[in-house]
Amino acid sequence: MTGESSTEDTWTVAGRTFRSRLIVGTGKYKDYAQNAAAAEAAGAEIVTVALRRVNLSDPSQPMLVDHVKPDRFTFLPNTAGCFTGEDAVRTLRLAREAGGWDLVKLEVLSNTKHLLPDMEETLRALKLLIADGFQVMVYCSDDPVYAQKLEDAGACAIMPLGAPIGSGRGIQNILNLGLIIEQTKVPVLVDAGVGTASDAALAMELGCDAVLMNTAIAEAKDPIRMARAMKHAVIAGREAYLAGRMPRRMYADPSSPLSGLI
Amino acid sequence: MTLTINGEARDLEGPTSLSALVASLGLDPRKVAVERNLEIVPRSAYGVTALCDGDRIEIVHFIGGG
Image 1 (cartoon, rainbow over the protein chains, first blue to last red):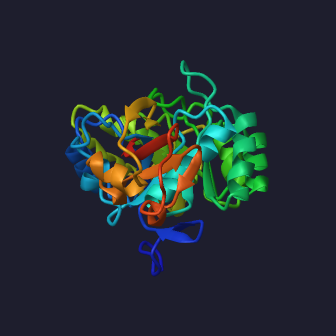
Image 2: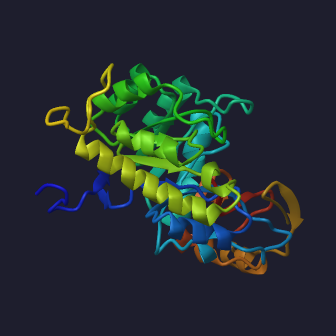
């Protein structure tokens, strides 16, 4: 059927199927209530979460799970703040105990200035996590060679950055991203660097399976509205990808016939 | 006995269990995960996990993140 799909357009990671192709983070919001409202407005089914020490001096502080509820969203625990494979394994073992699931996001960063992934350590951490039974979605640089190594090692999704985390600069290397999308058999998600709706649409037009973002929504003047914009952008980009874009031409091609002119 | 909980030294009346500690801290055990001396303690084992002097306990939960 043309124009409307007879089967729903879904994507599957580690055996779990989702309709929404927008994964949102839960950091940097004014409060958890705004965070939950933004995740709803984005139509997200998956949210990333971090794991940290409980504040013992004030256990009555608001808790994420009371607002962004695990029965409504699939939690994707991350390893933000980990700089070694061992840190990542320790963090995600705790996350698995806290949440009881094995689908996780691995990110092993190099330094705090640009937060670019340490790919050598990321690959090592991935192997440790897979040996420990995790299903690992891997945040990575936009390097097709390392992306292939991650896939070969058993990553269940490849998540190259568009630009550094929180930079909002959009997709910096369309060529590399295209190569990664072309070669990868598991889902590819642009994770990090999206700044506004057109960045998300571009990622989807290139053929990504989904987009993961946090700051672009959380730091918008109106996060709920931006969440909605991102939802539409991801849908629009996906639809454009499936529709297949027209060829680029050097010169104009008139839309109205040139014959039959008076 | 003295335990180190989330990096802070704390004096506790012993003997006590992990479930008693979690309750005394005002925490809902369903919303946290606990590591004792670098080993995960499954939630089902809090009641039978006796704490010892010098134990290093980490109690963590999910917070917002990207």
